[in-house]
Amino acid sequence: AAGVIQSPRHLIKEKRETATLKCYPIPRHDTVYWYQQGPGQDPQFLISFYEKMQSDKGSIPDRFSAQQFSDYHSELNMSSLELGDSALYFCASSSRGDEEKLFFGSGTQLSVL
Amino acid sequence: AQSVTQPDIHITVSEGASLELRCNYSYGATPYLFWYVQSPGQGLQLLLKYFSGDTLVQGIKGFEAEFKRSQSSFNLRKPSVHWSDAAEYFCAVEGSYKLSFGAGTTVTVRA
Image 1 (tube, each protein chain N blue to C red):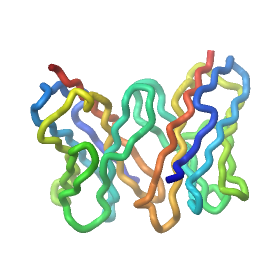
Image 2: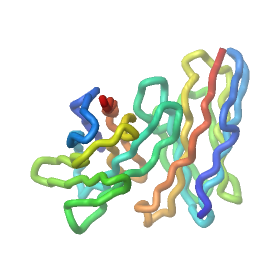
Image 3: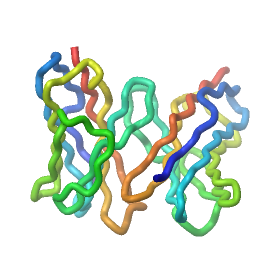
Image 4: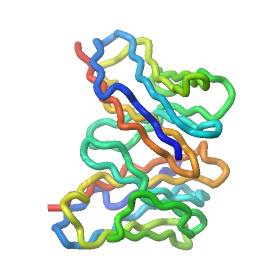
């Protein structure tokens, strides 16, 4: 069965650079969530989208932005990267009203040097 | 807003012994509850979830969890631990269309 696809799997950037993370939800899922997990930390909710509109916002820095496209894939754009942005970034998808089927991708490991 | 507390940061258990991981949640309505397992550098794997119905939920890898509304708890158990169960375990509650995770419990399995 198709799962949530995240790319790239690993990303290395330098301070002040820009990074773009991509998430492809399970087919027919209309909701995408982004989470950030720092080293030794629990995943923290960043932002979510439902039907291409932002539906909720968590602890996402102003340097980050995200959007969901017409094909329901989502991109998390991160600018002016800082060392503290080094983390595992997870995307999850679900279908609104059927949150029992919430699935996570394998994550993108971002390292900022 | 919902929240999850995992009181135990680290648990060490002998292989073959039983395991219980505690999880307490705070949420105003009927919660959707999850347990995830994460190996180092890996993604989150869903072990089991509770939405409604039977309060004892069976999951993968021989895990089960019991939802106790009166105690606001959703403890994870396994009767006999295998070395491959060494990992970090996260309890999560869903509310307002997002998951809130506990801080996690690291499980070490000794031979």
